[in-house]
Length: 314
Length: 277
Image 1: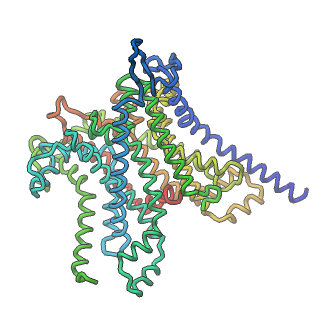
Image 2: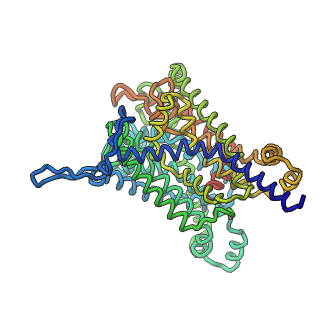
Image 3: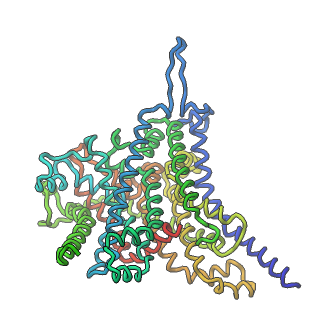
């Protein structure tokens, strides 16, 4: 047997086992992701409701946009695309994602820079910083709901003692502050994640860069702007995109901290309340589909922008 | 240069103090509240003055909360076991065997890990009802695969790629089957990565809320995040904050302990999952 045929039969055998290894995972992913997604999209084009899902029939784009002609020359548009509640949810979600990620990046960067310095007790500080990240979202929502309680909350107590406010604030209940409350909890909980990712980027910056800059007497702010920031920018960008995708699908925190208010309803909570609470299963599916499209678009443009080379993994 | 040295140092120390306090205080306050009962809960305290474990005994003695903890432990453990089993073999194929469509496959797996859960909720609900799994813990085991599986595959693949080619060359030449190579050569090397990804997947499954809220309907089947979210009083003024905080501390303490023990591993696992992207 010639070596070339031997090695080609070997690689054929390896190829076969590759697909054998991948098959179970692909099957599971098909069942939990691809198929349910396709069904959700389909439901969005039907009149499905919770108790008659099997007998749903195709109604085209009516869940998205429909014109109801009253016959006397007047009529009205219906559907998701003209639903003020939906657009309010979209706006809330975008605002939430933008503000939370901006603050998390800024605070994360500060914490990462602190943790990147050598000082006594650094291990302790890093452990402390990780705690908010380790706490389940539901638990953080409840903890903060209690701290933000309008009458007995410690947050109002602190602010009153410091004379920053004159009267207690109903953080989660009043429409003006509900979004602020959600943002505070999310920023508190997720900044550690950001800090860790940025810290990992910082630790890739070679130490002699700083030594050289110190010898040359370059001021720290300039060193940061000209050297550190460009070097860690890729890591920061990846972290920002990951967080933004996460923030766009926010559900748990809003659902528990500020249920049922227009001020904080997000795309995900809008979709779920239509699916299961209002018995508008098809309408909720249409909303889920739109949310999916938004996230898919961002993901695709991100992958294109960074030109990730997946074949080599470099 | 402009500021005296000690001012800078004091500023740095102050910054560290602020960072530590904001990180630790909410959980500290939850513990504080969980140790208070009756009227004492409604007086704002910054330091503990009387320690009372009755919130804990009423939560744990009630029966359903104990059951719900077991539900969470069961779901998270089974999810981790199944997804690690599927991921180790799959990531071997993705990391070590060249085949056409590998890049595309990795891209697909990465995009599934970014799926908004709400996008599959309607379809999964139909599927779970059709399989007769509604209100069963297996519904969660099944549906949680959507986030644990892509994550474990992705991290283990990046990890396995970094291992040198030489380690399996001899085995391939000896005609060892791929399964033997995974079991004998890669599994022992993979342990650190498996522990990290398993731990992160466990935490994710333990904390999951949306699917658990939707696919389970009775108290005895619920997992702890949903149980805590649904604790309520008869009115706004009767919300049992002491009980809620005790339950929160019970489900969070093990996580905080795990995270602190494994912090180095977790940090490396998180960065492998994201930064390497």
